[in-house]
Image 1 (cartoon, rainbow, N blue to C red):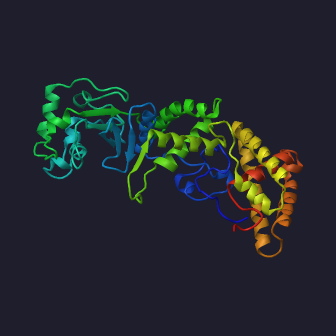
Image 2: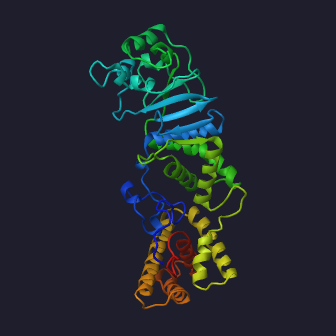
Image 3: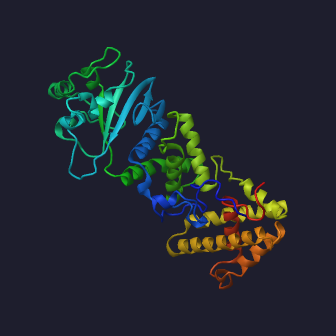
Amino acid sequence: MGELCEQAILPCIEGSAPRVSAREAAVALAPADGGRRSRRGFAYQDAVTLLDCLDMLEGQWTAVSWEDLEDILCHQDGAPVYRQVKTIEEAGTRHSIANICRPEEKKAADSSYLGKLFLGKPLPDGTRFTFIVNETPQRDLYEFVAERDRPRGPVSADARADIVKRLRGVQLPDGRDIGWCVDRLDVLVEARTIDQVEAEAMARLAPLVEACLGEKPLYEEVEEVMIWLISRYIARSALELRPRVFTADDFGAALDDSVRRATGRRRDGSTELLMKLKHKLRAAEIPEPEAEAQHDAMLAYRRTYRASVGTRRRAYDDLADQINAICTLTMAKRRAGRLDAGSAAYFETLVAVSEMPEVTSRQFTLAEAHAVLSDITARCQNRYADAS
């Protein structure tokens, strides 16, 4: 026992509901808490990036990247679509042409939102620009609004001329001018809050998760898949040396991996083998057939846990916390030389689990408690011997 969870963001009990703050979620927690995190911790543009990746699976893009020349960079038949996300926190405030063309530096039009969107990047044929907002824009800018899955209609000459006038003096590469960029500008209106964008993403993820599992997923499973996709594959990091780029195949593989991690099942219907559990039980001198039986009992428990709600879900969480505490005590005894590693540590742990009030009172069966122990052992710590 002793090593921390192999990956701090991996939920040690699947399907757990968020119950801690975003800051707390950054720390390796007790097994029952590993998968809980605040929805507020997701950046809005990361959630929008997930929608763009889902569009890519449907054939709209050939690649999606971020931490790149723009907040999001989509590729369409080899041409770039530069996408900038600008959210407004104050309810009732809306973007307009004047607002997005207003210089942040005095008289420097290239420092405006739109100037930054047009500048500093190659502009080959086929280039488009998308200004993504979370509020319906004012009437003049609304002329540029497009749906996520279809192009916008024509805009008035006055609206086009207004932007060209406000950005006068901005110098563009490749012989382009501001009018050329305005003709290729779209405004995409997304939902107001991160929660609403995530709800849309979950609705689109649900049939994809169902296709992987071969059966309808639980709400918690879809949510866990979304958490994995964003936190492991999409969330931005200032330490990244290169932009992250996904093709449809890359994102499909990430989706499969997230489903597997969230549910323990692969696309072909087989279950995650969790060889680490067998390895750790081997250190306790557990025969292979017994280890297989514990693996099967663990998977049955995970399915039961994912389907549980309310007080029963909380009781499972509390049971896992208590069993983790027992394992920590066993580990401390072993490392202090008061208990031998291997089968002795395993026996000590089983006896302590069987004597838990939750078990002796029959709130939980001994088999359930053993399954929870296997789940914790497989996911989080080497219980019976130090890692080699």
